[in-house]
Amino acid sequence: MKLAIASLLVGSAAAFAPAATPIRSSALNMATETATEKQAFAKLPASVKPGVVTGDALVDLLDAAKEQGYAIPGVNIVGTNSINACMEAAAKYGGPIMVTFSKGGGQFIAGKSVNNDADQASIAGTIAGAKHVHEVAKLYGVPVVLHTDHCQKAWLPWIDGLLAASEEYYKENGVPLFSSHMLDLSEEPLEENIGICKTYLEKFAKVGILLEFELGVTGGEEDGVDNTDVDSSRLYTQPEEVFYAYEQLSQVKGGAFTCAASFGNVHGVYAPGNVDLQPIILYNSQEYIKEKIGSDDDKPMKFVFHGGSGSSVEDIQYAIGAGVIKMNIDTDTQWAFWDGVRAYEAKYHDYLQGQIGNPEGDDKPNKKYYDPRMMLRAGEESMAARLVKAAEDLKCVNVLN
View (cartoon, rainbow, N blue to C red):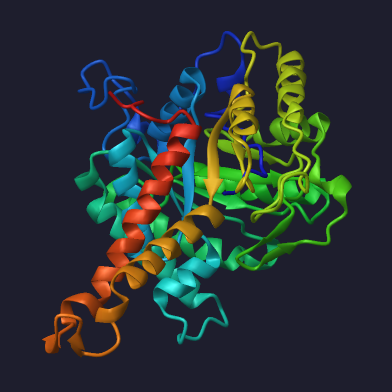
């Protein structure tokens, strides 16, 4: 899991004014709830339908999560097996799911043998995975958010390629290919970080894509992002930094964004006591923003939680109380998938030593045991079961109907 980042979502600058009516851009209007729109889920706004959720429908979904007090699992994937396991789990626990592509995950989907010097494999693989989700998501009957994970400054060409694909998809379908993208420019000075984010948000807003950005640093290492030796002071974001970002990004008409404010989170799993989480930072940031904008809302920001594998349920749910609406999960689901494959091999070990011959006879074929779909399905089932447990921790069970 990745619990390292606090994420603030804004429908538009006006959305946070106490008495103002939220302004919706033409791009976001594609998903706007209307009086005549049929409600697909009893506990969610009518704009939220089964399948990929974008634009205003995504804003509505995250608003509902904040108001009802749950967080959505955001899961890193590496192929259709892990993608399908995410949606299978969501159907079981009765809630939304966020399918998250990393740059490395996209490259893996395209094929590790393909040249990736200009990010072409990462771009093509991520797009291919997104199209798979668009084709099958409705079959699972749950809302699915299509998201991309940490993108450093040097990796921005990857996002440029994905944005171009969304712009083309929007022309043909009226919605973007992706629901949201995360820009992780936390290694840059604050002004440069937010300046670049603002430029991208202006582009995202035109097609209804949400921006997630990072302030502070998530420790540890994950999929090419290595912060294992970072100064510990950078693991804790200050409310003033969050408000600066809010002020700047709120100037983008129709922009929707999430702010990733770190509070001691670390990627990976560590022994108890080795990570000092301070989710009180989220509460302090909420209070600071509330006072600055004169809001009556005690939780004017929506946060996401990165780097949380191994975190206690108490810490997770305390963070949800501060407005966390999404928690990223990677390390735990990777282990769960492998554990399913491992258990399958252990159970059928004697049937997996050759094509012919097993405990039932020297001439008995073993094809049905070494068929790759068998072990992959075992991995899917194990991963899905782990995600159901995660949803329980996040209080995201039975939140649709």
